[in-house]
Length: 464
Image (tube, rainbow, N blue to C red):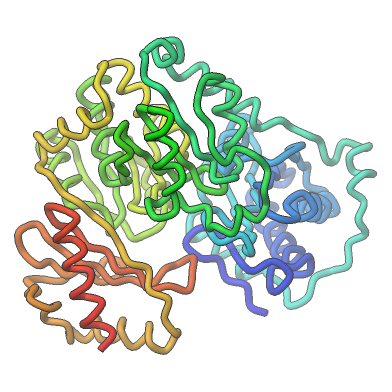
């Protein structure tokens, strides 16, 4: 099979396309790319909580070691940000984590992190893809021998990550704030961090379960209903949720209301700029709220909008001072940390914001509304046959949609997908997913009632 990397890494269904043979092919290609960067490369390898993660990680380490590449491997499951941070701290040529992030439990994946601690940029991925052989070589499984001769060594990336948090946050202020923290790991790889840092936190789904109880570990509102009920029952003030590899964030306020990534990005801009006196560019992806542009203008901060995918944000962070970079799907980064999505880090920043100001999350969100106006954003994920998806995208391309129900199209942008502006700061966007077989439809309006009205009108129009 032809192996192609998507928005972030190569992902496939375990035992169907995600096999030892295909994993070996990808690792061989990665080895060639590593030697193009460094004559004596080193790599840190980790895996998340998915089925067979340890075996997949040891397979990758074994192939790399056979290519004379120095390998550090984690002794247990870790998050993607842990691998990214360790790549920088250990000064490795690259990091590799076996994860399918937020995908359903039957998937696994292969993500490459560059030496700067963020996603490999598109040109790097293209080079790996070009080198993937049609068939893999046969490598004896010499993992234990490589451990003995130190070609492979264990490295605790989780301990490094926790220590970095201790050095970067006002943990005592947070613990003594009176605000109760709740955390839903969604059975993912971030589950040990909050346990170790905040022993009094209220925890949900923080145990090992590779099936994720059948739920895709994506921290969006409809997947977090049990956590929402848990927050109300336990009287939690801030509810943090992270996905399977803990690089995406979901958030709830003290009333059990979901606080999406659009609001989190605005809160982080406000906290870092107004309270911490930070300055820098704001970078967001095409599907983010238009309120980010409004806040950037009010605060006199430069703004850049990119295609969907954190790798585009990361590429800008390599060359410019970026204060906050974020995407609609819950991946956000800030200056002073690695150029990587990090759900736990972003959640702790909001928790610190609350602790420093003494304000609830509801009050902080209201402060944002007072600055840029109230708004809501949501999306529908449409499972459609490939032919129908292509037909709808072609209709967008050919300007066949001039209205959706009673909503007239005023103008169209097509940075990545098609965003139809409907007036009054309302828009709807149509785009095929880069990680799953879905057509995504996003909308923004002043409240959720209008958002769903736009989404329903769009769905009815494109599925005629």
